[in-house]
Length: 236
Image (cartoon, rainbow, N blue to C red; front, side, top):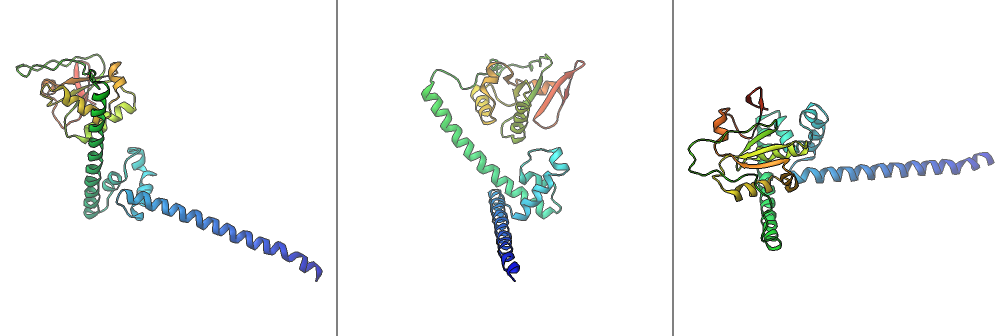
């Protein structure tokens, strides 16, 4: 009997330890669920949506499009027209809110820069604008670099520029429809988060299109990334 009594405390301790471990696991699980719910709600998604997004990014979609945002990923991989429409509407709302915030901050930044450095430009253009009276388009010069043609109100253009910068890729940017307005290009470059230091060292140049895109005759939607190959300009 004495042996049995002596053995009892370890059993109680083991049971207590097991209970504490279970409580710890439940707490961790609860915290994880709360975190997932919070992340999902930031995108207007349900927890089920968020779990599907995570699963998608662990598969082929994550390889094809690393870092893809939840709404785009879910919209592309939607299994019904109803879901595709729902994700598209959520993304339109999210993009509008994001752009409004960025434009508001950009305006405040521009005002601060003008106050602190009234005689300087935030971003210098690489060349003088072409005269609006020029009848023939300027030729696109080739030095082995990429050239990218962009336009205003083009989120795909902004995304492509940011991807090229992330790859540390030098390029010459040509703004289609600038109408010789330097400030229009500067504002767009700031919105696209083009790094001023890369413009200063000419890793990136900012240029008016001045008819070059039309002169190439390649057609298609913008943005267009092109490079000269064997004397011919080709989309990349």
